[in-house]
Length: 350
Image (tube, rainbow, N blue to C red; front, side):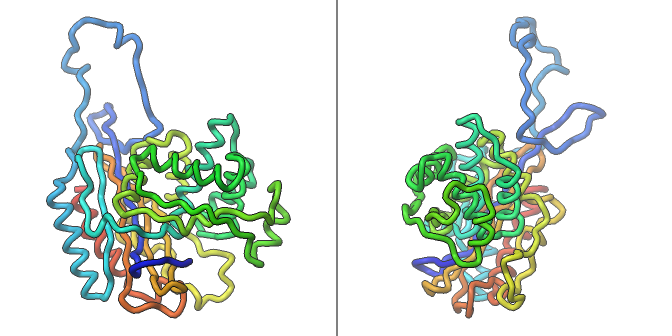
């Protein structure tokens, strides 16, 4: 994939939430799909007893000052590796995001696959539709394996649902706007598929399998915006669509079957959050690209839920020296991202 501007940085988004469950006095991880209400309790006017009072979260949000300090420390460490960091952390407990270079526009690259899936599932739900097995598998492989032909199939489905590329772009903007992201640049440019996708697409049920589809990986957002999107996934703000995408992002990463040359992509499949936050069951998606524009970046979006607090974290890194091809493994970005996430993990999930 490609980028314009500064050698933009690797994207990582981390989301965290959990809630307390009553029973044997123990903490249990929460699921943002779990909501409850009691009409009887609402109608009951008697005073609440001690045991009926709402349970407070296990922990308040981490100190924004401490999180900012870790971001700055990780950024300084990255500079020693020749990597510029763009990062942000959001949580509902703060009135702003903690960030380092968090306001600069960055291309989404393959992190757009999570945004695309969320937008497509949301649009389908509004029309009373569910993804077919074919679409569900394409969504899974686009996120778990980062396969571009499967991503194109999901984009084609979104375009079918939304009435074309323009409607699909509006659907993506609407998804991001619902998370408070208004500084996104979604391109209207659509392109026909690469040769390696033709057989797969022709075998699909797409209405126009070889028709032009939006290049959503070239959409731009900021690290702050990316962290807000991730926070929305963690907090369940996108409803069933977001919960489904969150679960897909938690799957162990696998290598793309589209990558025929093993030397073209040398990074570990679980680089970044997969290594730095393995014990926290992260839901994450990597993205990388930009060599053609001399602006390579690599990064991730990650989701975590811990101790009653929801977090969205975005981390992007740009190497000072361009790699020969779009391969994070040929740069110091994975190590820089992992180091920053290792600094954040004990602060966000003490």
